[in-house]
Image 1 (cartoon, rainbow over the protein chains, first blue to last red):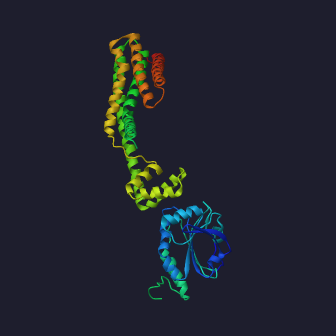
Image 2: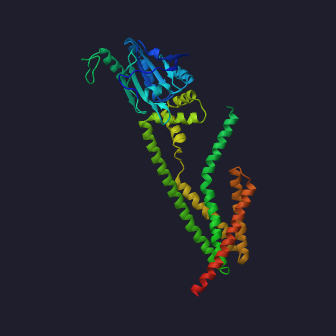
Image 3: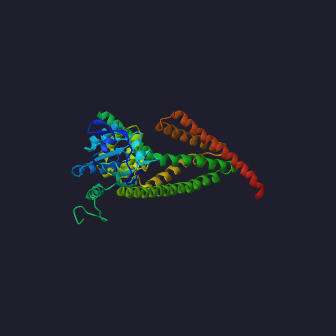
Amino acid sequence: MISIGETVKDFLVKYVLGVEIEPIGIDYLKKKWTILFFYPEDFSFICPTEVTGFNDHLEEVKELGAQILGVSVDSLESHKAWIKELKIKYPLISDENKELGKIFGVLDKTDNRCHRATFIINPDLKVEFVMVTSRNVGRSVHETIRVLKAIHTGDSCPADWDPEGVK
Amino acid sequence: MPSTDLDAITKSKERIDLKGKTRDLVFGMQDGLISILGLVAGVYGAYSNQPLIVVITGFTGAMAAAISMAVGSLLSTEAERDILIAEIDEARELFKEKPYLAQESLMGEFTSAGMDKPTAYAAVKVMSKNKDVLFDNFRNSILDLPAVEKENPYVNAVVMFIAFIFGSLFPTLPFLFFSGRTAYYAAIIATGTALFILGVAKGYFAKQNFWLSGIKFFLIAVVASLLSEYAGTVIRDLLAARFA
């Protein structure tokens, strides 16, 4: 699995935003902070809480100069339907060929789907944060944003650092 | 859906329910016919000149077997029911704790049946609006646990008892009214006829060739009686030397 400080390798896949399908490569990650999160599959009753959770905090993330990208191995058509179902306003990448899953090392070999993995990537394409959880455990969107804010301070932050409280 | 179609489905369901209720009746009667015919034929083979022994054996055997069958029916139904209730309770606990497991497994079931993922998701989402509906589908389709039947196991046991006793009358009563070979043949004919009617009914309900089913049941009666009579004579001859 890709680790802290490593540079993300080049890739070429496609994403869906609304009903539009566009190609996406490494250039998309330049000049912006990126929260890239992998999830096992569309149309699941566990995943939507995360996918919609990131959607609910999209504006807050944008204010931090960051973007959100969701990734699963589902098809573009599946993503289109899933976006429509959940009213998602950020891109969902279709990693049908497992290219991104292999680059980030998050493919579950048992079924070739992705683990629940979250990465924060800086504009220089270096990984700043990695978190992987079990398939049955949903992630905390608040925690991801807290870490992003902590990184943005450029300072040392203690355990349970609270951006709203004492730094 | 036209009301006539709905009526047809309702009638079909009623017939399926009726089939379930008559299971003990048919099973009890069939067992009473075959086992008591075998018993009286065997005793007749051994004591063809003593019809009283044949009749007493037939009635006492029928009573003992009917009690055994009724108790067996009661205990097995109760045990089956208790196990089912325990399994459903366990499933309900799991469902309360992790409802998404039910949703995910139903999704999997629907997609493997050929439904596309968005449609399957929508279907499960609609079901999820009512927890009881979601649980019932989870219990039935995924865990393969049927709903607990409302039938009274004591009623089933009584039905089994009466059916067995009634069935046993066909092979036994002829020995009260006739004697010798006539009684024996009358028992076979009476039992065979009753079994033939049962076979026809079974074939009708199972939508099979009911004539074939009836003949099969009739032949079972003939074969059972011949074998039992032969067994009775052989055992009598073998034991005669021992008790001489």
